[in-house]
Image (cartoon, rainbow, N blue to C red; front, side, top):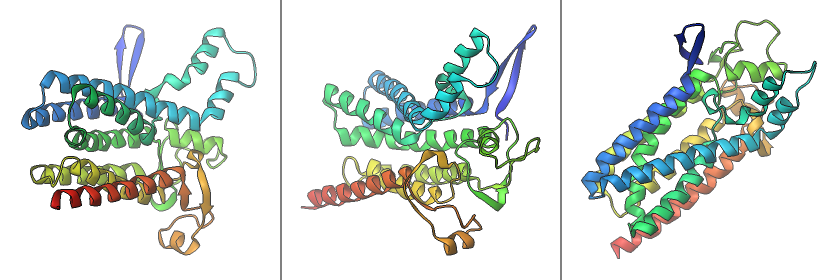
Length: 303
């Protein structure tokens, strides 16, 4: 785990290159380049696709960060208010600006997906484009970019899993160490966290498989929008499954369901709930809606 990939030195000053922000940027660039290539193949105007991907990225980053901050609003409030001795004014400003530090980790996928979807819908209507074709154009790019972004999550230590014997230990500079230390789950001065399930890598691998599947299916689309719906169903299943292993409980549960036998079989703490987190509920809604839409549209084509 390397929260900072490297530090660039300029005289007496240094600039940290954060792994999370770097991988997010790489994922965004890869997704845009893929969309431009796919757009040419599907007959879309290249300049228009570039505009679309730019604004979808902006909306996605803002939406995912806003939802993350809302989920952790009490933490940011305490950070801004501060405890202990008085702080210099610049330190106060820096702490209060913490919600802007996206390069340190902290994006909620569903918040970004909803914001980006709204931009895509408006853009498609303005250009009189088929929404299904536009969604199919962007689905592989989303899977590719998300896979790379989850690797960034792993390097930063955010979105971590539950304690398990077959896990990964994160260093003090990671988000996982910081949050577990604040919760009293890491002893003061401990060099590493307990072994945690590498949920970031599980999701990255799942996204990579979804990307491969979409690329294989792109030439055999059953109807416009089919690729996007396949991605929605696949991601919903992936996310709901990975959520069972997630350990950052600050994201919240709608209600808690504990399954001690299953937890023991998975080598997880039996006292921690496995469902139903907010993300699992959203995944259930997304997967169900996508499955229903796929069946209806497929029947229309066959009729």
